[in-house]
Image (cartoon, rainbow, N blue to C red; front, top):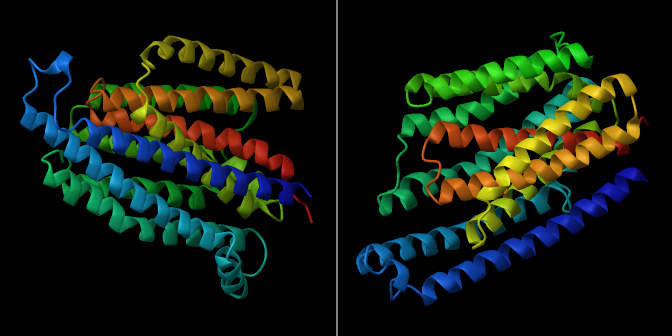
Length: 342
C-alpha cells in the first residue's frame, strides 16, 4: 500500500518536474534569443556587442543541449520504471546472487553503473565540446575523470562500508559532525591546489561510509533497493528543478544565506535533542525542514556560481555535494516509512 502510494507520488512529481523544467528552459531560450541583438542599456557602456552575442549564443546552446539531455534522461528513467527495465535487471541478477542483501547491493550497483555509462557521453560533450567551443572550459580531462572517480569511490565506499562498524546514536552523530567539519576546513585550506581535489575525494569517501547504517536499515526491507533508488531519483529531481530556477530567475537569492545557515543550526540542535526525546513525529518534521532548507541552498549556491560569486571549482562542488547529500539522506528517511518487511 505504502509502496504503491510512493510510486504514484514519484510518477506525479516526475511529470511535474519534466513539464516545469521544459517550460523554464523554453522561457529562458526565448528571452535570450529575443535580446541577442542588443546589449541591455545599463551594460552598454561596459560590454561590447560581440561579447554579449557570444554569451547569448553560449546560453542558447547550453539550453538546447540541456533539453536533449533532459528528454534522454527522462526516457531512461521511464525505461527503468514504467517500462519494466528495473524489473528485468532484477530478474537477471536474482539467479546470480540469490535473495537477500547481496542481491539488493548488486541491483543498486548495476543501476548506478548503467545510468552512469548512459550519461557519460553527455557529460563529455558538455565539458569538452560545448564549453570548449565558446572558450569556457577550465577543466582538464584528467580532472574531469577524477570528478567521475569521485562517484565511483562513493559507490565503492558504500559497498565496502557494510562490513564496517560505523558509530550510531548521539556519539556517532557528534563524531560525524566533528569529522565532517574537519574535512570541510581542510578543503577550504587546500581549495586552490591539486591537494584540494584529493581532500574532496576523501571527504566524499567518508560521507559514503557514514551512509552505511541508514542503507543497511533500508535494505532490510523487501523493497529497500527500490526505496533507495526512489530517494536517488527524487533528489535528482529536486536538484534539477532548483538549479533551473536559480539559473532562470531574476530574483536575488543571496540574502537567503544567513537565514539558511540559521535554519541548519536549528536542524542540527533539533536532531541532537531527538536522540534523547526519541519522537518519531519530530524526526519526520526535522527531515521535511532539512529537505526544504537544503533545496533552498541549491538555489543559493547555483545562483552564486552562475553570477560569478563562486569561481573556485572545488568549493562550488563541495557546496552542491553537501546540499544533495543532506536531501538524499532525509528523503530516504521519509521514504523508509513506506518500507515493507514482506
